[in-house]
Image 1 (cartoon, rainbow, N blue to C red):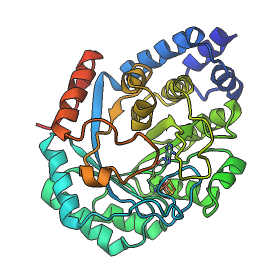
Image 2: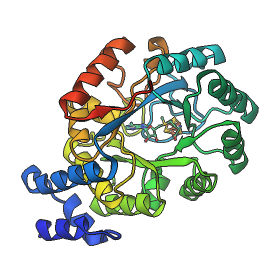
Image 3: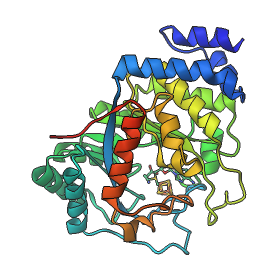
Length: 339
Ligand code: SAM
Ligand code: SF4
C-alpha cells in the first residue's frame, strides 16, 4: 500500500490527500526509506547539490503576540528583552557578508517599536552598504508595510503558516486569525517577494490529516520556501508539558514537500538539530537544500529563546561555519558562497 501511494506521489500533478495521509501515518523508518530516497533524487534533479546559506540575525525578542508555543510570547515576564541598535544590526550584516554568505535574514518578534519608516531605512542602508539579499521575518503587518519594505529593497519574506487547520490555528493563537495570516502570504506573493510558508511538526492536536493539508497548502500557495521543523515545548508557555515533535515525522514531511514542490527551498532547521545531533544531515538527505547559520551576537542569541536548547553549542561564528562546511561537503553536497 505504502509503495503504491509512493508511486502515485512520484508522478507529476497535485498529490492525493489520501496518499499523503497514508505516508504520514507510517511510523516505520524502513518502510519510509523509499520515500526518503525518492525525495533525495527529486531534490538532486530539481535543484542540484548546492546547499544555500542564509545568515540569520534575530534583532529583537520583543513580541506583542501570545502564540501558545513560543518562549517570546508577550506574557513571558521571565525573559529579558532586547533590541539591537541599527549599528549592531549592520555589523551583524557585515559579518554575514564576510562569511561569504549572500543572504541576510532579519527576524524578530512582532515589535511595533520598529515602525515602517525605521525598517525601511534599515533595509535601505543594509542594501546600500552590504549588497546582501535581504529576507525579512517580522510576522504579520499591513499590506502597505510589505509594499514599503519591498520598495526599500527587501527581496524575500518568511511567514510560516504554522498549521493549515483552522481549529488548531485558533487554539494556538489567541490574538491572531488564520484568515489574516493566509492573507499576508497572498499579499507577499502579489508583491513578488520570494515567500516562505511552513509549519511545526508535532504540535498537540495535529494529526496526519492536518499535515497532509499543510503540504497541500504549501503547494497551493506556490511557496518559494517552507520552514519545517519539530515543535519543541518551552517551559514558560502553556504547552510546557506537551511532548516534543519527533525526528521521523519531520523527515517524512520534508520528503513529501520536496516531492510535491520539486523546486522549493527547504531549510534543514535549527529546531531539528536541537532535537537530534545529526538533524541537519538527516534533513539534507531527504530533500533539504538550505542551512541558516545564526549571526545574532551571542549575548542576544541566548535571549532569543523560542524553545530550549537553541543556543547550546559553539558561539564562535567562524567555528560554526567551518563545521558546517565540512558537514555539507561530507554529505557530498556543495556550498553556495559569494566570491
Ligand atoms: N514573529 C515572527 C512570526 O511569528 O512569524 C517571526 C519570528 S517566530 C519566533 C519564528 C518561528 O519560530 C515561528 O514561525 C514558529 O514556527 C517558530 N517557533 C516558535 N516557537 C517554537 C517552538 N516552541 N518550537 C518550534 N518552533 C517554534
Ligand atoms: Fe511572537 Fe512569532 Fe513567537 Fe508568535 S511565534 S509569540 S509572533 S515571536
